[in-house]
Picture 1 (cartoon, rainbow, N blue to C red):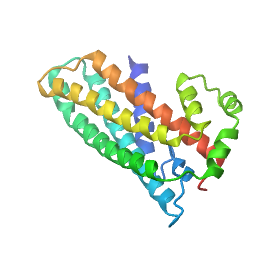
Picture 2: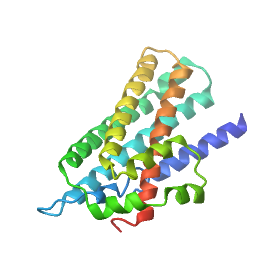
Picture 3: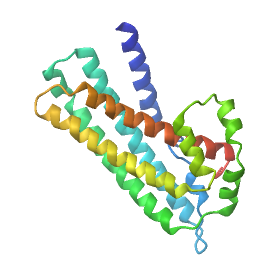
Length: 218
């Protein structure tokens, strides 16, 4: 139990540190560089602004959810403890709703913006096998990232992260409803919530890492 508490604290601290960075690089960052505006040339910057905004809210939401889980882990299966931790869940929900709004607008702008063919061609030629081997990635989620990026399909990436945030919102509301009713939340529902965050975070991280490897928007 002591080891689990220490491990959980390290994870929570890591996520909080990520949320405090002035220039986040952890969740689909730099992908806005795959788009251009032939008229004013500012669309890519606007897209990346929404990427950064949504990523920050996503990480803040995840951090609050981990803190909620930490409190329940340390206090045991007690309804009163769950009620005391409820504000963390409320914060997580508000931040995820803000992330959803940012990513929905990001998707809308991307659907209207042309691709930068230089970037999409670089994505098609990228050595995904070498990248996966170099970083020892053995994850089905990376296969989905590769499928999109190898086709230069950034719009599908944005579609998926908007859908992910919508799913997390629904799962947060489910757990919050249980806590608001004065009950200790279903362990299975909290596990599913954490898995939804984790899967989406890895998806966004892999996208960001590929774009970082390309050196776009540096």
